[in-house]
Each structure stands twice: as structure tokens, then as C-alpha cells.
Length: 515
Image (cartoon, rainbow, N blue to C red; front, side, top):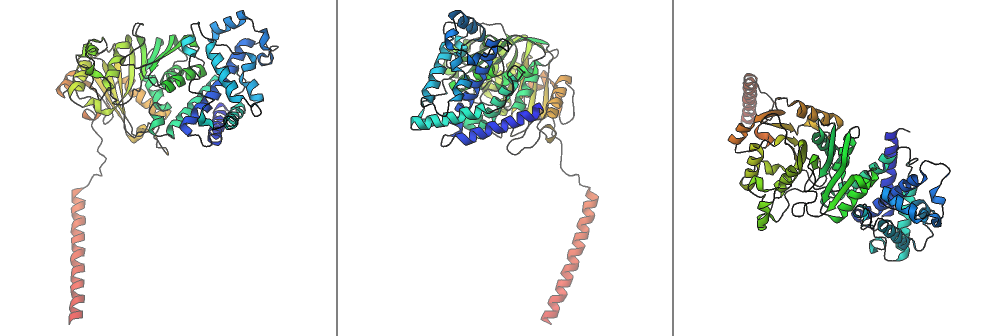
């Protein structure tokens, strides 16, 4: 079976589990249990593989907990970031899941102990609270212990039956892909509540390619509104053959999504010492500001959300916002995220940011910020994408590419909203590899192409009151039918002649009737 066929089969099995076992539990709520058990299996197999160290004579799951010394545990935690005793492994729990009357509390104890194993070690912040949203004692699972256990056992047995192959045979991606598949499907079927934090994989891929374009090595990748971590991981996939020195960084305000992002890192084999995801409000409680700037920034910040803005007079002096001389409007935080990203960007890097289209033409503070960005030559490209690419919204979004190392003073505009730039699917449009390649070729070449792309000098943009809408600079192709006036006139004459003829015939008929 090919890897693609294996992946397709696996995804079908996972979705079947999710649908069959959720029962009366809301799908969006229940995702946590499917994702949590999938993660539990992953770290169990990952840890067993580490402890066995390639020695076929050792079967960690069969060992007795009592042989684990303090030194063995300490060494493992320093390397892996956490510890799992043989009796706590997924495969051991799965054996008796259907008959274990204390399954829900046993799982809670195991998860607490896995998290606590990192206490006092460098990995503590990366492990702490990982299972916080996976509450096995919650009434969402059922009103009785028996109901809870029945549902948990169904998920465990379902996940146990998934064929990931041998862990050591480079099957990491299968776990990670399965995880992303679940998140994307739940998001697609949950409307706004599910889709608001999730960037479709095809858009993530484009953003990642834009941010790392032309670089053979980067120090680290950052997402200031990390969501489930999908943008960071797409960057990893695009950059696997190159060097990422310090790893992956992000900040997320939603606690549940913050946990998803950290799990997602582990599931894609990013060890705790190669990522740092922080919890909190990026705009008012930023992390990583004292670190060296980032060579690549990818972001899909929330569209036009409220923030404190000028209600906090200290923010105008914040080094992120002060250079622009004005704060983003309180009801539209988009440019606050953009200025935050710009301040974190290194002199050699790029930031690729998904933007709500309104920020490119509205007046007031947003216009002043656009002036700052253009006058200081930070805007490399603005790309208009097709509508209906995102879950929960049909808006045709834009991507802004920021750079601190431009070789000219022009801004490139790309209209990638036409039908040649997307594929229609049942629920959402998608960008195929062909479409992404086409956009990247335009971005790389900076070629002017009629109706599609144009590079504009910043003086021209200034003349247009710093409007950065793609439609202001790239003419729309006239797809109206070309009409030959001579042919049209001849057809009208013919029609009139026919009408006159019919009128005469009707008059004759009426005269006969009356006569």
C-alpha cells in the first residue's frame, strides 16, 4: 500500500471512530477526547522507542515498573521532557479498557503523573497542562462512571486499531497528519467556533513558502497567533531539507488551542527543546521580545478583533507600536498584530501574514500605519486570494509579505483570486500544488503580468493615499462578451422586420373576424 493510500485509509478510520463513539457528546467538544487518546498513544510509542534504543531484545511495555531507578527516570526526562512507566503506556491500558471499572480515574492519574514528571526540569512549561482539556471525569462523557468508561474505552480501542506501522519506520508524519486531519475536519464541520483558529493546510503551505523563500537556513520560526500550530508545522515541512537552528516559537491566547499547538509539536517529532509555545495575549503580554529577532514569521491573526488600544496610554511608547506613531483602532487590532510581527522580524527574514481586506483601504489610524510601512519600505507584496478558502468565512482574504531587506522601493501586488488560482470543492475552495507554485513564481520573479501582477513604486502608492488594495493597481480582466455593433444592428433590423410582419398578419386576422 502506498503512503498516500495508507494515509487515506487511516483518515477514514479516524473519522469513523470520531463519529461512532461520540454518542450524545457534541462533536466539537468530543474532539478533545479523540485527539487526547491519539496523543497518548503517540507519546507512549515514542517513549517506548526511546527507552528500547533500537535493541530488539528489550520490550519496554513488558517491563515491571520496579526496575526503573531514579537515575533512569531523570535521564529520560532530561532527554524526552517527560516520563512514562511501562504500566502507564497506552498499549497496557488498552488491553483491559473494556473491563476496567476505574478507567476514567486511572487515565486521569496517568496523565497527571506524566505532566508531573517534568516538574523541576527544563521541559516543565512545555509539558505542564498538556492534558488539561482531556478531562476523563467530565460529565460531557456521561452522567455515570460506567457511561464515561464505556465511551473512553470505545475511543481507546478505536485508536488502538489504527495501523501506524512500526514507530521507528519513519511513521511520525502519519501521527501528525492524522492529528491535523481531525482538527481540520472538526473545524470544517463546526462553523465559526471551530474554524476561527484553523488555517487550511493549503493556505498554510503558501504562507510558509512565502516566509522562508530564498533562505537556506534560518534561526527560528515564529507565529504570534499560533492557534493549533499548523502554520509553524507547515514551515517545518517546507524547510525539512534546510537548517532551523533554534526551532519553533509561538503565542496563543486560547488555552484549549494552546494545548493543541503543544501536542501538535510533539506529534510532528519536534522535541520540547526545539519549540516554545507561550500562553497569553500577544498584544499586551508579548513573549520572546528579549530574544534575537526571527528569520521567518507566519501568521493568521484573528480578523478585526477588539483590543485595548489607546485606552492604555503606555502602549504608544511600546517599541512595537511607537515607530508608527499611532495605535491600531480599538475595534480593529489587525495592524497591531502586523506591527508586532514587524518588530520581531530579523533584517534577513520575511513575515507572511493573512489579512482582512478592509485594512488595506480604510482611513484614519490604519491609513497612517500603512504610510509608515510603505515609507519605510517594509511591504514587499500584497496577494489577494480567492474567496471561501477558510472554514467559517467566505471572505476573500489577503496575504501581506513584510521584509526588512528589499532591494528596491516597489510594492508588488498579485491578484490570485481568479479561477485559474483555485479549485472548487464541495464546501470550500482549495489551493492545489499547481496554484501555489504559480503564486510563488510570480512572487519570486516580481514579473508584471497583465490582470494578475504589478509592481508599483512607493511614490505612486503615496499618491493613492497609501491604499494597498490589490484591485487599485491590478486591472480586472474584462470578461464581458465583445459585441460587434454592426452585427447587433443587423439583428435588430431583422427582429423589427419580423415584428412588423407579425403585426400585419394579426391585423388581417382581426379584420376578417370583424368583417
